[in-house]
Amino acid sequence: MSHIITDVIAGVGLITLDRPAALNALNLDMIRDLTKTLIDWRDDSAIEAVAVRGSNKHGPFGAFCAGGDIRFFHTAGVANDPDLEAFFTEEYQLNYLIFNYPKPYLAFMDGIVMGGGMGISQGAVLRIVTERTKMAMPETNIGLFPDVGGGYFLSRCPGSSGEYLALTGKLLVGADALDVDLADGLADSDDMADLWDGLTNNPMMSVTARIGRLQSRLKRGTSSDWLTPDINSIFCLDSVNDIMQALAESDSQWAADTLAVLQKRSPLMLHVTFKQLRLGRSMSLADDLRMERTLVRHCFQTDHLQRSGTTSETVEGIRALAIDKDHSPAWNPARIEEVTSAMVDPFFESPWSAEHHPLKDLV
Image 1 (tube, rainbow, N blue to C red):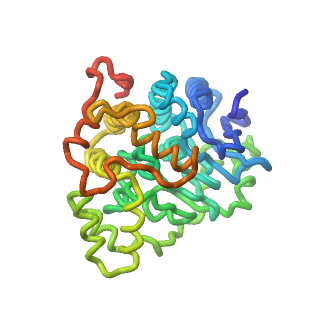
Image 2: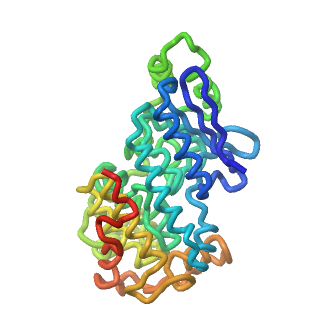
Image 3: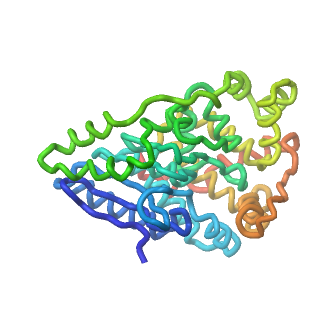
């Protein structure tokens, strides 16, 4: 059963993610279907633009994409299922395809937009959010890191906001995303269907003009309430330990709340994520995705720490959040201060030679 619905109307390819019971979380079949569709449309001169949206149990919109299917990650990680390797390779190839798509690609990000949902939206030329948008990269909460190009697009957020978002998994609601250049315009959720239909309901108008008309109807205002200056002054520091110390020494409620959040995240993956973001700042998207493909391999097969399957940080994090739901992951190490460079640095060492890397063809 396909979980994407496609149509072509008046020169525009339309994609609806249709797995509402799972908040449109991506599985391998969806990734393959999306990739095939986008490649077919890329090479079809009759299609001038592409738009993507999600659906909920009542119909279109209301949810965009909650990320990758973490229940599958857990099952496959325990069983050493080769489809887990295929999932990340093909997902990152899809992310790269979207970021480099030669035709306008528009993302209607109404509702939840997390993890893999960011990977299929951040490469869009027009990223539309609504007051219902709930956006985050919360991977450190499950013993993972913000992948799908997160090292590339988060590191390019203003100031040190990318490090803050990556480490804490902060939830951005509606216009919050505009503050950090993770969205281009805001629309009322009640208007989304009309905006979507406006891309195709006037075939005598050029596709470019229809997109321009859509853009003109979007709001550009930002919220700014959440973007405290302390983010730049603290998350610019040189290490996770320095950030934690600065938060502990601050007398602000924001610092206390942020410290409490970080103390619940995987200490190991906080350090990995911090290094990922700092390296990602100077990388091309292709190099960043290759780095992330290396990282995710080590997340499930952490040979340098003699951990895999149920003992890996990621499988344990998913167990605590989504399987047993006890919200008490046994992080290893348990404390941020116990993480060493000898634990972190091997995550960035590719298990493949350059000519055998799964993403060697990205340029």
